[in-house]
Amino acid sequence: MALTSLEQETLHNFAETMGIQLYRDENKLNWRSCTIDYLFVKLKEKVKGLEDTINRKPEDVMWECADIANFAMMIDDLYDYNYR
Image 1 (cartoon, rainbow, N blue to C red):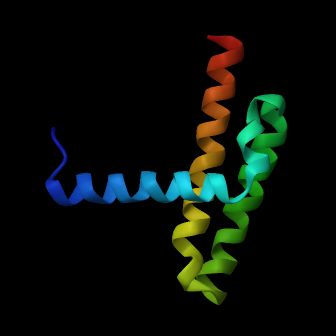
Image 2 (cartoon, rainbow, N blue to C red):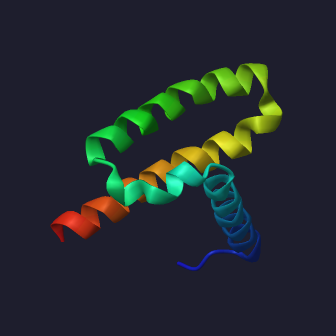
């Protein structure tokens, strides 16, 4: 099943936001020097903080969601790099 043009646009925009968010904190660019356990802890912290962001700073929700997605991507990449 193919994505609709609106879904494709949403995906593209979110991926772009992920990239911007990743480069906002250059320390995150060295994720291969981290452990999967460390990244998983950071991912859980970000997910836990998302509810607070929704309730207190809704304008930052897209950035928090992109941060969560970035940590998930880092875990996948590190797992692939080390175990596949």
